Image (cartoon, rainbow, N blue to C red; front, side, top):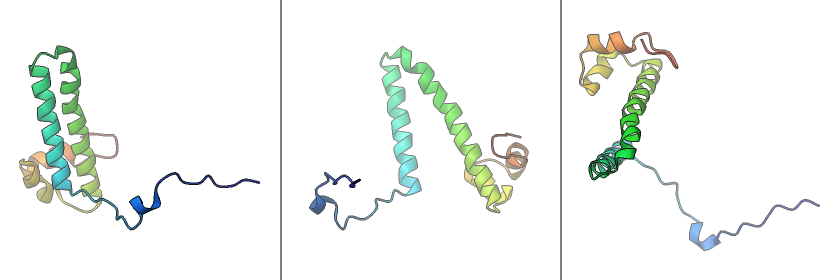
Length: 105
């Protein structure tokens, strides 16, 4: 006799609650605030956290590559992507035109 465990979550607390949606621009603004706060924390004397702060740069580069790869797969051109990154179409094409998952041109 296998019975499903009874939920311990109070029903009236969650019933009818919709899914929380976070807009990309709000999420990016939150991320920028967190990075700035991390920088201030390191600047205040947390020298041991400096390598982790520096590693954020590589993580952002990887995220941009993933985003551009997805956009290119969805049919967006380098000409559409470039102005949003503040680079020329030629620079975007050179960096990401041959990008596949896990590979940077």
